[in-house]
Image (tube, rainbow, N blue to C red; front, side, top):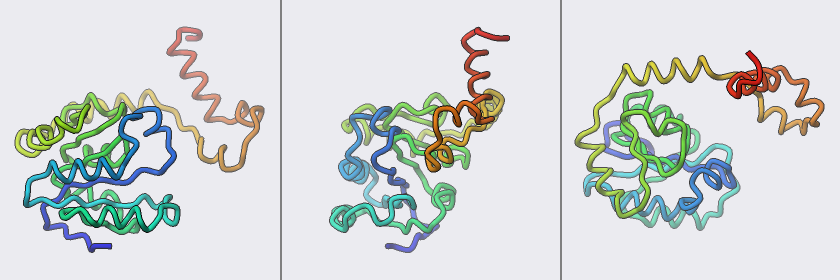
Length: 204
């Protein structure tokens, strides 16, 4: 791993867990993360690095060959999964992601973002969705040179998101292999069902 240099000019890409619905369903044409990293690295200015950080949940699951291929790319540096993602987001000049929460964190920390998938924060000013590798260099240039943070819109969006959300422990239910009956009795699932029923106009 390369030690992160907060004074360096770099873009940030956080590797996704695989397999993951956030890629397979919401970005089916961008599941090859190695190719995406290569395309991003080629699209950056010549004096700019690409910091790639492994997801803590994937430690031990990818082959050494995968990381070696990443390190063959001249302007790419591999960052330890022990480094906090928010630390990278705070110092990056540009965050690039498929649909990761690293994009949302970077946006909150007032950094420009490029996404490749259908993610909930795509419509916020400051986020550009890439729909093809050929347009990526132009989006990079646009985000680095023209991007402006819109605090008011971000605050309004976040407030609406929190107001319209419920807390559900999906991971906990999956980890303990909850049955359908147990899921039905879960307080979070009940709250989610009430919220969906309200949205569908079934209840008031």
